[in-house]
Amino acid sequence: MNQNQKSPSHIALRLLKRAWLPLIVASFAALLLLVDSPGWAAPAPEMLNQTVPRPTPTPGNTPVPTATPGSGSGSGSSPDRDNEPGTVGGPGESGTLQAEVIAPQVNLYEQPDANSAVLGLLVEGDLVDLLARNESNTWWVVCCLPGSATRGWVPVPALDPNRDPALINRALPVMQSPTQPLPQATISIPADGAASGTEAADPVASDEPPGFGLELTLQQDPPYVWQGNRLELIFTVTNPSQSDAVAVEVRDQLAADLTFVDADLSDEGRIDRETAADGGMILVMKWDSLPAGTDAQAFVTLQVADNLINGAVIDNLAYADARNAFGQTAGLSIGMPPSALPDFR
Image (cartoon, rainbow, N blue to C red; front, side, top):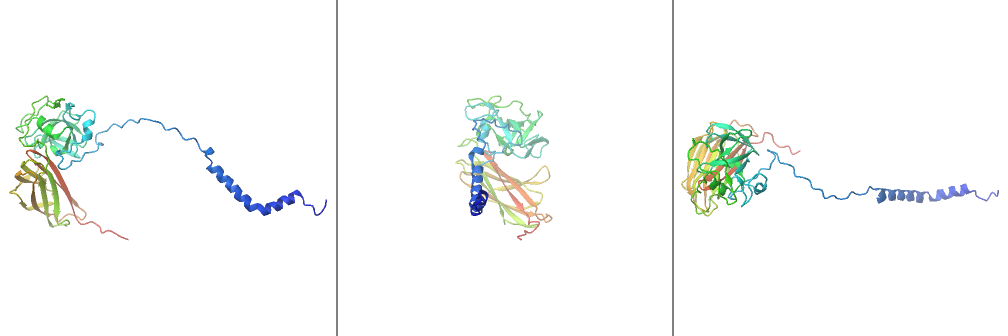
């Protein structure tokens, strides 16, 4: 063989030495094309028009409606509940007057008085039938404790009725005496809106249908206090309606860590002190009337206990109503200095 003639293997090796970099780049490009190729992906499933049934609500998991000041519903009736099965819906529908417990827990009392005997406990989400009311429409007779036939009295702010409060005010019979036997029959509202099963109560005389709501705000001055300090709670009750509110009351049960010192009320108001069932003090601020579109204020001076620990919080809740108006709640929390200073490192 001619020594100048190159063998095929020698030629191939020489070409490989010259073109090794383009060959590597081409190999990587081929791999990338294979990975990104749609032919290797599984086909996407078809979209199905599937209907998923709504879960059945269970007691205690139902969202609690929040009362809106001045909405005309002191207990915060929820429009969503008007369309739930088993409850009375909108105008023209019929059913039993019922209410849902919206307080975390509330006692069932023997009489419309927080100092009366406690018959049992209702919790948030419980559903009760409405049977009657007291004259001022601040307490309702309900049935029943879960798993029993026990009937009793519950304060109105703890309940969310399934009908408009003005209609309930007219439909429920009035219990004239706390010792009067509690009614047995439930109240049904037929399509014409007239109550059946018992005589409807006459609405309270007013230029406006019963059921307009008062508004209540509560402020603290100074905004920050500590153990042993005095502070002033400022209660402002407003009548946003076009009718005068009659026999206006603001009730506030003081926490054990607050001591009453003094009070000053505007518009010829007065304050009474009552004893709660647990021995605590209830402040009752009263005005004979509150003209339409006006407000009244109470300035209550209190002293904070000096043995509170740092980080303690005192919750204070007040409730305002009138003889011809539905009530409203307001509250605030009074915090002690923090138990530990923040670390900004």
